[in-house]
Image (cartoon, rainbow, N blue to C red; front, side, top):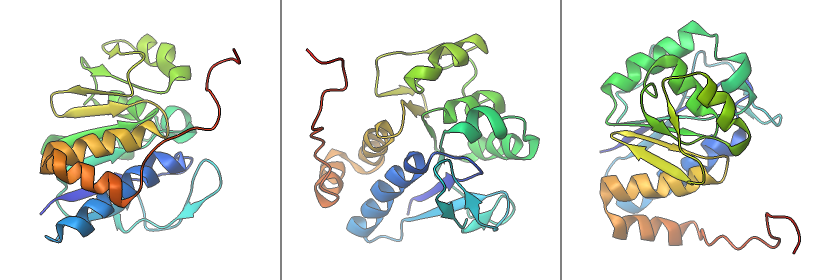
Length: 200
């Protein structure tokens, strides 16, 4: 049985945790072996995320199950409003020590750095925050990589890269064929209608 814990907090970027949530819960459905995903927050009160979505944590820092995977989302909360929250970063540090895998999406890497798990490691983050994270010191920011694996730490670039990272992670835990089945189940076949670069 695999238990995924997804941290939520004020100003967290929605898709940073909702994308992996979709991957992890689809994986649980396909495996049918008691896997589960839980949203963990400092309190059980609703949390307003970066774009206004309100979510209600399932568990708090004091009453969640043991987590095999800890996922930390990014957003303004990760790099500005929550980075000074000692209770939150302390919980990340303590929980990361016991988890098999520690993951972040986007600027969730800032919280992992502040809490300790990303220090001295190779990490990815949102392209617009790479210089700021590097300036914090004791971290190697890998650019131009959707996700980066360093031991049991896996970090990804912004927003949609978290889905790629989550698919890699379920493949690492439960096998590539299973990850391919999850990808097909959620019909994850990216085909952006416009180029991300400047027009040719």
